[in-house]
Image 1 (tube, rainbow, N blue to C red):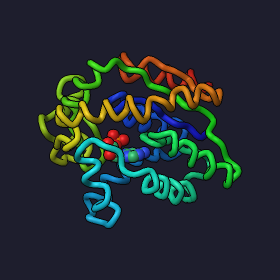
Image 2: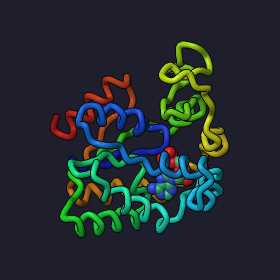
Image 3: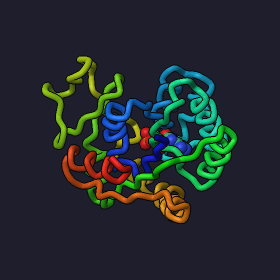
Length: 213
Ligand code: AMP
């Protein structure tokens, strides 16, 4: 199954993608995670991406399209994947369609996770991350011990772009550049809308139902 999780920052795409990975045994491909790893490793890609990411803007289309093109060719993508945070612009969606057509593939479902704006700010500003990839929320999903990852014992941190001012710009960028993809995929007959408010289990159940169980 080839799935796109669409939704604003803070909609819970990453958290739900993790659960989908476990259920369907296909990889999660998060351009945000790939870019953050590149920044951490100080690669050329990371150096290019950092300033865009820190300001809450988008990394240029050509850069992320190149990343995805390479990633989709890897062996673990043979049975499908979950795209999380890509595509984010109409140009990226068009490029994805072309890349997939070249590989004889197509997207099966696009799940749009819908959450009101006021909830997003609260979710993102309380979000805490671990370098192992685990995510927490100071109120909604706190770790057992404050500031420490339950899974690996690592120290939790707040992503630079989860500071309140940057959150506002990320949401504005989403409205302007990514929200048009909802109509794009609706027109293509691929869109499944789900309510992204509720418990993690409830939301997961809605996604699974939307993509046919
Ligand atoms: P995310 O973890 O998906 O919220 O992504 C964090 C940041 O990485 C975004 O605010 C962008 O700066 C950058 N980024 C991630 N995915 C993309 C993409 N598909 N296109 C452009 N920039 C991206």
